[in-house]
Figure 1 (cartoon, rainbow, N blue to C red):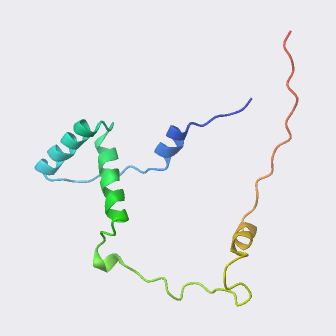
Figure 2 (figure 1 turned 90 degrees about the horizontal axis):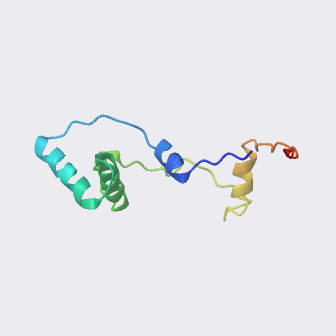
Figure 3 (figure 1 turned 30 degrees about the vertical axis):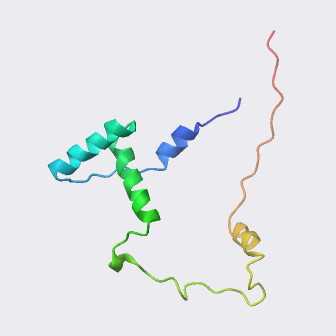
Length: 106
């Protein structure tokens, strides 16, 4: 028996519920956007607005942090050609279960 998880389920599970407080007119605007866009919820609209702002680089100046100096690149692999293999080696690979032959009914 194979288990199938729909993409929709995985997509929803990647999100996390939060509580926000908005001005009344902003909430009304969000409801209008939801109805006008055909989206299913205000959460989808807010998620889209945040994704668009992030993609456009709209961030608070104090939230920008540099990552310079946080990693070391091996002198033997300056182009990171072996990086994928190195990272994968840090994690255990799941073992596949042996499949049992199906019994026929009848």
